[in-house]
Length: 122
Image (cartoon, rainbow, N blue to C red; front, side, top):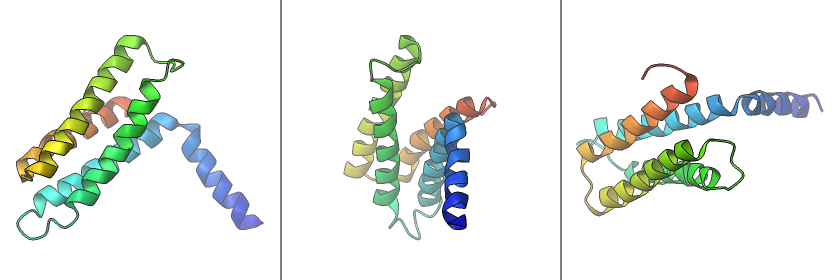
């Protein structure tokens, strides 16, 4: 029972600040993509998994900001949705024509959004 309470407490801490959780997930996705980019010549076996992780994350963001009852102002929601659509299209481009330099845009977007969520300069 003690371990269940401990696990619940850890999850509750994460949920207590959803902006921080979102930022951490974006930074994790950026790190995975950056790792693939840096090791491109040696090993790019994680490319499609890293792209899939990032795409799933952005799918959640897109679903959230396009919900009519989302609390964000409409112009900000539209900007996030536009970024999400760019991420999706750019991901498809990378899958069709894999190039390490193409990953930079996804890494930068994730890091910039994470910095904004954390209230820090990028």
